[in-house]
Length: 213
Length: 213
DNA sequence: ACCCACACGTGAGGC
DNA sequence: TGCCTCACGTGTGGG
Image (cartoon, rainbow over all chains, first blue to last red; front, side):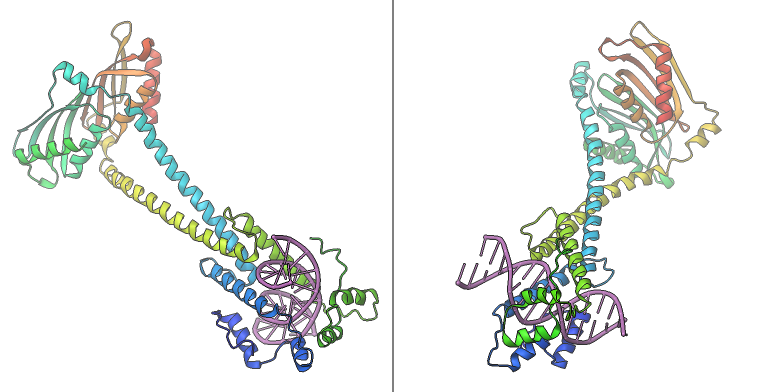
């Protein structure tokens, strides 16, 4: 009678439990007795409120279980202990991940700190009257010769070589001279996999790369 | 916690029914009294076990609350709902962090993929009969001249320059030639802040650095 | 038969 | 006062 507005969404066990209880229609014995003797019928006023409270707590417990991917059993106790272990697992995971991330960030900050040591390369180049320059010449059908003079910047040489490698250009007998705030790079280059390199295209490519790094 | 020496015991079944029938609310006192005279003493056998169960569940709930930094109230219900929101927060955090890390890792994998292109530097050096070498010579009171021939490895030149910079050694007019699987590095060096460099110490330092990178 | 987990109704106590 | 939360002892169904 009191169960007719039971809109709980439960899963198998409890649902079955409740359903059987409903179907059997056996009320609790104490309640039944007090209901038979209808002269009294105390009913305690707390009954429905308490029932709502239990219901709400049950819903929340199921909610807690539903967002936990690791469930060993659907006992009330194991739901909580599973939640605890899951929270600990997540905490460790977050800690580990943020540690890794922080470490990576620290190393990048370290290199950034070193970068501040080399601010005046442009000034030095200007003082020595050195101009930036990109020259490309043909050696033979497959090979080109390049000469690059650029401002000295940290990692710039590595980045240049990497970029050329990514564009399918192979470097041979490369030479790098660092002096007076400038990089002087000379190298023979040729395309990988018999790819032909054209002089003007290559020069434009080099200038594009250099302006990016 | 203080329930161990709680000597309130249960009322017998008949007594419970009787109390319900009469609507009389004297159950707890009657319970104690029924324990005092041991002629009745039904005790239901489930009592202690159920008490243990409640106790355990309470402990676990407290445990769940203790590992949760965000607590709005220590109600039984709010503990659970706080745990739910905390788990969701942690899940989002893990997802975000792993996403960031995965992105960074993807870029570093890109560079690692490039590294596989340069596995045979040692072979090439051997084929050309090139030996690794570290030479140091004195130019004047403050300056040394160094010549280094080492196997070509990615980032090795940058690391060497960085290491020397960290050791307080300034490089001038550095020259790097890359050919036949080897790096040929020549440079003038001097100590920063008028620090004197000794030939043998410097050579040992160079060899230590090279063996590390 | 036993054991376990749950829902129940109720009184106590805090605010 | 009333409202809300909790612990209690118990009945009951499933394994």
